Image (cartoon, helix red, strand yellow):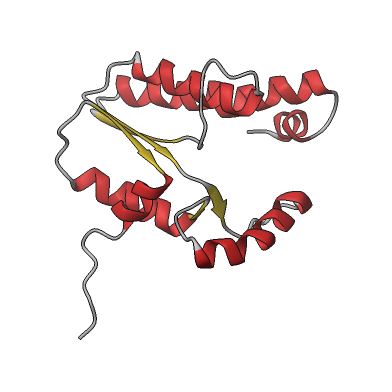
Length: 159
């Protein structure tokens, strides 16, 4: 993504924001899936979002739902969609509202770890575990709680 595309995604008019957001969160992801399919990839993993719905009136969830559906049409042998909660991570770029929301969610995540948050390390471990597990379905949809469970497979307990 070049600087102009990032600017369109992060500032400017609402129309510019929407176009930039769609380009990054739909077009680039779909094109990556198309390249993967053309290159012989048989199992595609997509990190999407809780609430993704192609029929939503909300840009974010609608875009996530649209790209999920369009990748499914590519007909991978196996297609895994991960819909985590709020990703808990430290970002290099400045996103003050997101930073504040994550700070407010820390106590919630401590008491209810699978309710609405997902540490990025948990998501990555779940995706890695899923890749090596045999599939019983062509398309798999993992919501937040299942992502947390899947991330723990293979853990050994300290003695």
